[in-house]
Image (cartoon, rainbow, N blue to C red; front, side, top):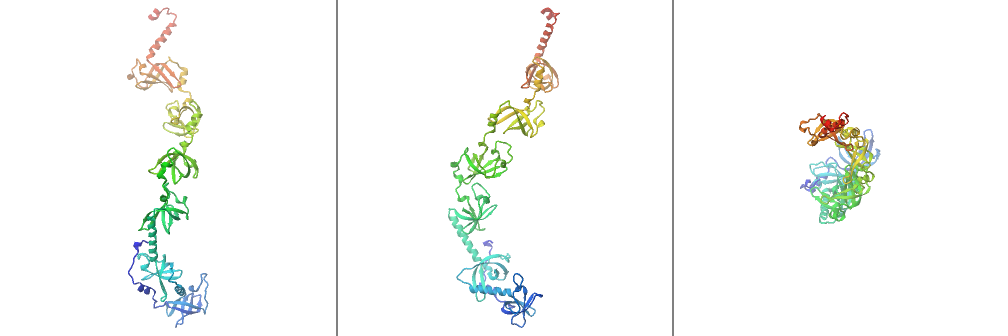
Length: 549
């Protein structure tokens, strides 16, 4: 209930009290009677109360908690007349007990003492409410109730202060307003003290929730939001505290209208970020404890209310880390290197892999260019495939996959395949390894070189035309380059793809798969062959005859 919602009425208190407790004409008289008869079939008893007609009472009022009748015929019993059924009075033993208990309470009441009671509102009348406190009925005037007239308070459990006891009328008046005003003043007094003092105060953790915890300071509860627990950032309070723990807190806000007290634990402790530059710097190696693991990385505790983030990419040199939990467990103590200090945003980043040996160093000490090794395909891309050898992933480029230039890695390999390759380059500076599969196979150029030599006249089909020359296909998988200057007497602009031409082999490098040919030398080659042919002809006896011929 908000204080501003309470209605305070101008009512004559004495008149209201008299109205509430005046006796009804029909009864409410306390009399002594004698049980005349008990009729269990009708579930009632007949009581002689000294009047013309005997009274009736329900047997339910004469039974104990086990359902046993606690009186017998002839027993004397105090009852209160509550009404009539025809000419017979109706009486109540329970009401008589309440009256007797209330009278006993009033007789023993000490007005020098303060009585705070707790009960349930059971009735509502013109002047206020009836508060039942363990069978004792007290009067709670509306003006002292702090209850909004728009609400239904029946069944509400409240605390109240006894403010008046009238022994003559047998009535007790209580005030809820007095206790609420006291609490309000007490809270404001504590809040003012917290506001004036800049020193932390000791509180007791009362309740822990998912969004924070409630802490008792001086008898009032304040909320420590989960973002106000640690300088690390939002944390789960259940991981750090238990109910009943003592904590140091500072007040950071108080909403007077809602009576919400906001507290902070981290404000009560020095901020480690204020002098972070004096404690650590980028490049430092520090010991930490893994505090939390997520799919994207792990959080590590540095102590002194500092936490750093270890990204999944900084856990291992292995680029295929699926989840940090495959490498780390909460509670693990590890060494990491500081790689970033963002003082403005209070963020720390660390690396574990920077303290581990680089795989390229281990690899280069174990293998060299030219070694033939086996590995497993870890991924296939448009430009090639990656093959894992020990802790290194080498690139098998499409150009090194097969001598058949129409084939790519994705055409012949899939993830998980074991493949034998040759190491053709190790780049330690960039941690890259280049591999070749076709280097282990005999190239078409090698086969061609086994049956051809420089000077042979060959015939091929124009495959491609470039500014610097043309490529001709000699046989399956074997191409030769004819440079522009070697095309004479042919003209490049007159040539077209698919055209057959003759040329002379002028260069063969089977290891590098390079073959060059020349049309220009073709005529000279033919002249040489003609000379050789005629030099072997015995019918020609002189140079003159040869020339003549």
